[in-house]
Image: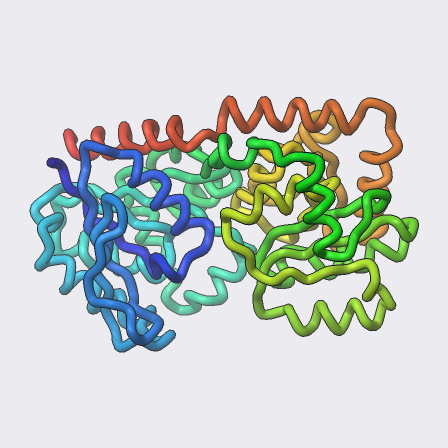
Length: 378
């Protein structure tokens, strides 16, 4: 059995889209075993834990500062693991885990490094975070033998950061079967009523971390330019939760906005299908898995032309663009979907076809397995 060593800042149960993608892919790669080294971050998490085809090894004391220790403790832990005898090292993002992967590859010069770029924050954010260590951050890209980027936007970033090869764009995927399995009209009505909306309302749903970069405040403000029957359903949690609730009160939109908090992935298909359209007015985006899930669920989508979103959103074909930091343009996009003859049907058909063709996890896993095999043989 071939083995690969993965470095990640965190892993389950502390997850975002990148960690979910790693599990979806590794669960489908049957000819490999994986040892994953990450920071503990939270007290009480075990040192070692098996998840699917991945054996997770955590280092640190169980505090947020563990991520700063990962570059030192991670390689030391990795040297004791079965995967240390293999050739392939896999870094999940060029973050704290990336620094750990770089340190390990400095100790083991024969190792072949696959760097997966899943970053979603503005690129300036990463530049500010690394500060004077920018030259070390760039070295992660330079040392990588192969770069997998989830969007063309991130592939271009890899080249600017000094990667000498040609990054391969392999996006994240969607569990198409689960999100496309349709709920009954009765279930849809039940879900809408459970959040206080009726059949005549037009519900704009967003699923995301509640942070500035996801433009949820602009979605809330856009309601002022829309008729009363347009409502917003906000799913997720994050640092801006209180600010957004205060904004809703300031706007007088309490009857038009519902906060559901973070919901389990098993609940999302129904909640999406109980809505009428999806919107995330992102200020930055690596790719945006929630868009793809909404498309699989049969919703027309609204997004901004930033980051990796133009990889899948073509205005008038697979979605509708709005402008960043422009609430009235969100309102215009929403009314366009509602009022323009034939547009909604076109967006739904094209979006579902695109997701089925290009974003199924099985095909994505096969492409990443081929990259692992190539590195292992080189």
